[in-house]
Image 1 (cartoon, rainbow, N blue to C red):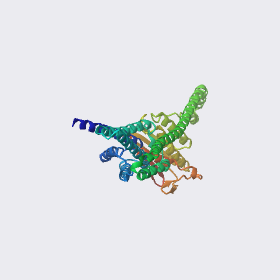
Image 2: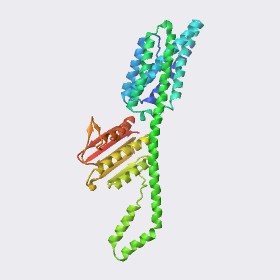
Image 3: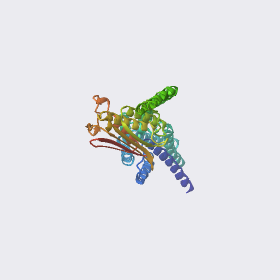
Image 4: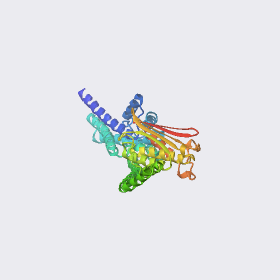
Length: 424
């Protein structure tokens, strides 16, 4: 009796280890939906899917595992269906290949060493131990490579990954179904190749993520460089102003001495405009602040009336790269639209951003000339070379989707507005 209790306890421990690491690996790619039912079913799925017993010619377990895995990812996980299906395409071949190999290896040991009761227990534990150890290694191998991957990989890239995974996905299904129980050894090369291919996809995904992040970081460095260059120019302007202060005061005094108040005011206003500081502090995040400064100065140069009200923390669960993209793209679009308004007094941009009650909200409104181009519900740039432009809102949409936020675009005859809300 106690022997059976210990045996079952060992089985449960291995089942738990396998389920735990499988769940962690899957959730590195996708997040479970915010409902108790979704979380419960995802946990149940993480228990049954990686622990399924796979035999040669086993079309039932192979088929049910595949269907159950797909349904779980599509119904109970957030994100696009394509990305969630990609998880199945990558890890399903590992599940069935690993379980087939573990079952057959433990079975061969059982028959070679002798069909005894204690050896039956030993080989069953060995089978589960191989599976549990493998998923533990996969998680520790991949956890650093899969951080925030959904934020940097778009749908087109996921489709490319799916296309690459089709070959191992189909080949392992066909191999298992067509392999007789008497000759499982012939399926070993395919099973091992499928596991290796799926693990290689993690390297490929890591490479893609690093490439995208490096590209975005270079853009951020350029923005920071522009900001500090402006700051240096401002400091140089202050030094020049200090050096010439006596001369400027003398000129103003001359105007006042001859009761020429208008001349003194005009001269003083000219000095204020010439040496106006551009290194304003809009928010605590230095990189985002650099972007806003750059765009604000551009707006002022184009005689656009700007109202910015920004209250965001220095540290947000939203990547700086993504925040910069949101600010830069929307401000570029607003400035471009404002420039096309002939009446300078009508050029206006209002931007509000804040973090409050667990949400990041971003709203920007600008006046425009009423010219909107739409193609299949996508906003197209009104520039003459629109094939090279018009990706700003599309990029913003990708960012918002990655954070499971909402993007709302509205416009009237005179105003164009973008509203973003992301739960943080």
